[in-house]
Amino acid sequence: MEKAVSKPKSVNHDKIMGFVKKWGTILVTVAVFIFFSFINWDDDTNSSLFLTTDNIITILRSISIMAIIAIGLTYSLTVNGMDLAVGATANLADTFIMTMFVWYNMSIGTSIVLTILACLTVAIINSFLIVKLKIPDMIATLAVMFMYQGVALTYSNGGAITERMVRPDGSHADGLVPAAFKALGIEPDLVIIMLLVVAFAFFFLNYTKYGRYMYSIGGNPEAAKLSGIPVNRYKIIAYFLSAVFSAIGGICLAARVGTAQVSAGDAFLMPAVAAAFIGYSVGGAGKPNAIGTLIGAVLVGILENGLIMMAVPYYAMNIIKGLVLALALAMTYSIAKK
Image 1 (tube, rainbow, N blue to C red):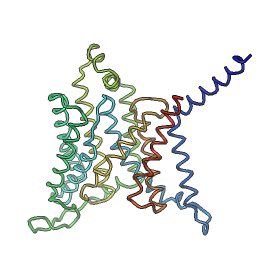
Image 2 (image 1 turned 90 degrees about the horizontal axis):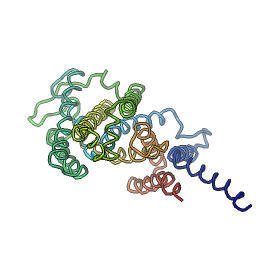
Image 3 (image 1 turned 30 degrees about the vertical axis):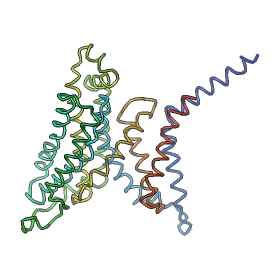
Image 4 (image 1 turned 45 degrees about the vertical axis):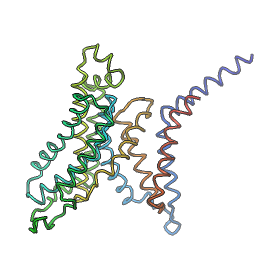
């Protein structure tokens, strides 16, 4: 009789834990959204300041750029790598494309193509260090990150790139940022770009042989090699995709701000890392995936925006963000294993 009574309890417990493991991150995201909606309630207007149209648009903008850069990182994670240079790549793209407009007065299409080509040098160096010299991914990309932070600063002469700026030689830059380019940084264009990037990554990783090969390499590189998969080639592809989409994120950042501020893209590294790793747990995937990365970006974006609205000091924000992110991961890993 005891066994008959305890068995349903065990089954229910397993179902609950399985649900938490698969959807814990989404539950935390919803809970954080509801919390900030009520904590920022305005009694005078009897409405939430967090839920205003302007604030939702602000959240969508920050999420969009973060998600695009995080998708770049996701490609490197699929081959069990880690591209810590995504922030520096985005920063280079932000700086480079603004100089194309302001310094050289180039067209939008030419500027975007040249910017992506410039950012592909990051992928070339990453691939050489990781594939040819066999340096561990994290160490190699960390070195490249520092290198390209310096490249961007040196190229911009250590300052911001703005319209009608005074160049180091004393001349005035007469180029202007095209209005059509600035439109890419506002809604709905920016959100559409993000959704297209996520959709492409989802299709590429799940429905093409290239994506399946990359997942195989990430799961077991030796087994993938014995199966005839050219491991090194697909690692290179992963890092090239990482650079391309990080560059797109940097281009969108330039369109959103309309200037290139010093090290602006670097600030997206840790949020992108958090978004990509949180995405592992969404839907019980247990691996880097496009939809999970998007959900992770939503959680991080809501968290950052809500803390700012609560006037939390900048030096304390990382503590709170870290605690909430740890809770999201704990719900999907630690609790589910008990």
